[in-house]
Image (cartoon, rainbow, N blue to C red; front, side, top):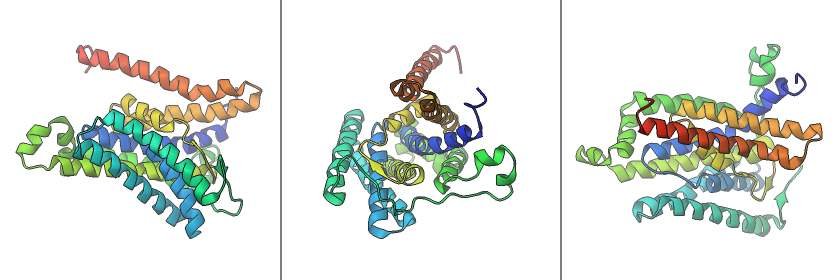
Length: 303
C-alpha cells in the first residue's frame, strides 16, 4: 500500500486535476447564469488540438496556449449563439458541439499534419515545469506541490478567485441574478443575454486552458478523442460541487486522484480495462450521490 500511495501519486493527482478543474470552473460560470453546458468535452478537445497546432505553427508554447484559448472561445460562441440567440435546446446543442469538435479535430489532424490517430513531434516543447522556491525543498510536500506546469497552479488560483468574484462582488451578484432570477434582474436593467454570452465565452476560455494543459502540459501530443470523457467528469464535478468553485475543486480532487490511481494500477499487472474504468465508476457513484442529495434538498431534509 505504501508503494501505491506515495508522493509521486499525489503529485500526479494534481496534474490530472488541472484539466478537469479548469473545465469544471467554466461549467460553474455557465450554471450560474442558467446554462447547463454539456459541450465542455468538445470545448476541451478543441483547445487540446488548437494548442498542438499553435505550437506547430508558431513555435512558441505561450502563443500555442493563447491560440487554444481563442479557438475554444470561438467554438463556445457557437454554443452561445444557438442557445441564447436562437433559444435552442442547450442539451442538444452541447451534444452536437461535442460531435462537431470530435469530427473537426479528426479532419484537421489529417489535413494539417497528414497523420491519423495521433500527432507527436519529439522536437516540440511542452509547458515548462515550475519549481516553487523553498517549497520544493520540503521533504514529501515539495514533491507534491512543486514541479508542475503553470496551468496547474492557475487552475487552483482561479477556483479561489472565482469563489470571491461570485459571492463578494457586485458583478458576481449580477451574474448570479441572471441565472437565479432573470426576470427580476431584467427589471433592474441588467442585460441578461449579454451576461450569458460572456459567461459562455469565459467557459470556452477555461476549457481552452484545460485542453492546452492536457496536450502540452501532460503528454505534448494530440490523440483523437484524448479528452476521453474528462469534460463529462467536469460536468459531474460541477453538480457534485453544487455550482460552488471551492466545492467543485474538492470534487475535482477526487476525480483527479482516481485518474492518477488508475494509471498507477496499470503497473500492477491488473487488466487495463479495469484500471481505465475506475475514474468513470467513481463518476457514476458521484452522480448517484448527487441525486440523493438533490432529493433531500428538494424535500427539505437538508439545507
